[in-house]
Image (cartoon, rainbow, N blue to C red; front, side, top):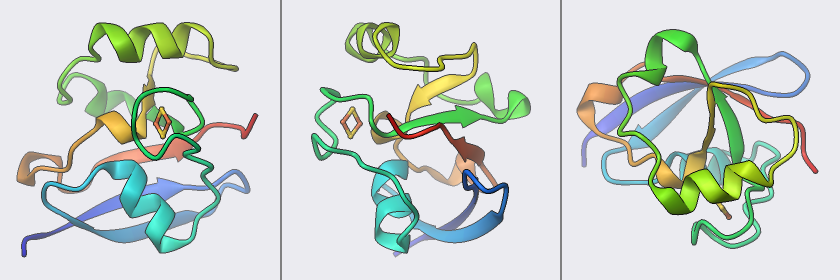
Amino acid sequence: MNIIPIHVTDEAGKRHTLDGIEGWRVMEIIRDYGLPIKAECGGACACATCHVYVATEWVDKLIPPNSEETMMLDDAMAVEDNSRLSCQIILSPELEGLEVTLAPNP
Ligand code: FES
């Protein structure tokens, strides 16, 4: 099991370092750590309640969103250029140190 640390800032501005696992969705890592993320659809790209902001320096290192994710983000609240659905980001060794911030919960 390959542990990959990532950093997640919560809505209060507190930064947490989480031990991610290769192959897991970033949403699953955030949820299992106990941070407040709804992720209502369980990662099916059907709710947008796993919305995060990706730190600028990481945006281009991620696989770009597919059309389903783009459509879900179109309907999400408070979307920014660096918005992503965290259930669509699969953790890989290249993402060690990834920085995301939780978007406001709808
Ligand atoms: S958990 Fe529903 S879109 Fe990500």
